[in-house]
Image (cartoon, rainbow, N blue to C red; front, side):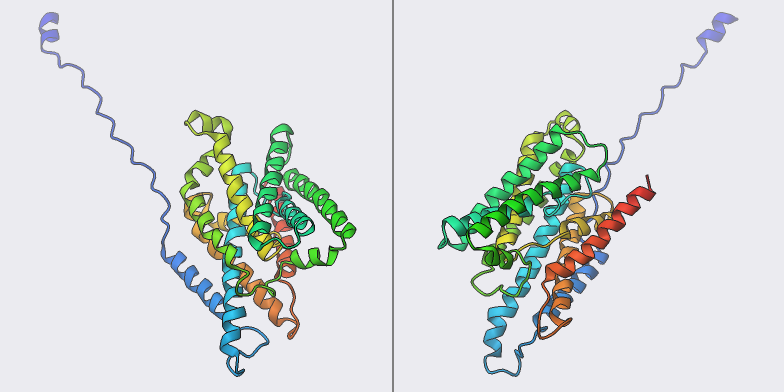
Length: 341
């Protein structure tokens, strides 16, 4: 009976084959909210073309002045806003710290030092030479900051930008000493004012390099995201961590150096914009990049428009208004971090 039962027993059912897991979908780049943001940004850009003291419609040379001053100024607003916002996004990704950007890590001060040295040693240097030297010194300064972070263990992420601002203050003090010794303090103040008043046709063209920087950041977005998880994780997945850091540092240096030479200092822009975007969209660098560019352009344009009309016919540098807004947002981020542990 037992044998019969065993002979007629059914073999155990094999477990069902595991279904393949669907790959996580990438964040879509072009969505309706992004298109709406693009329309709003385009409206601000068009408004910037027609805001100013000079009457471009009634004056005889209005059309000429429009082409010489308004169009280059507006293009500079677009390119510099996108450049500094992207630089902050990449730097925050590589350092795994939301409170760093070119003006809180000393990168801008290093670029300014390179520009000042060029003005002292080679007074008749072309704009391209000044930009090249500023990019090189900005790259060196950023690598110094990254090397410091690797060698020193900091218990709080808030200490990182403080250390960066301290390093930047040292470089800025050295630049001020050189400017005082060579009687170029006034020229230095004009160059670093962060105002778009002096942007004219024939002077803003180096900013088009920012387009190539944006393409490079978009292509390497996934690598920057993996590198942001740490050197050990990046190495385990077969990524050359040091090469990615060098690439990101080079792109940051190019963008910061060019903007510093053409426009000047734009404080806190790379800090405010990526943090605002990540609050609403998370930390996907590739899908956040268009948003970061649009918000950066909008913030700089709004600050410049306010500076043009607040005490018309005089003008407040856009960097002054940007610094006030950025300081408030920076404090808000610090308080938010403390409240959330």
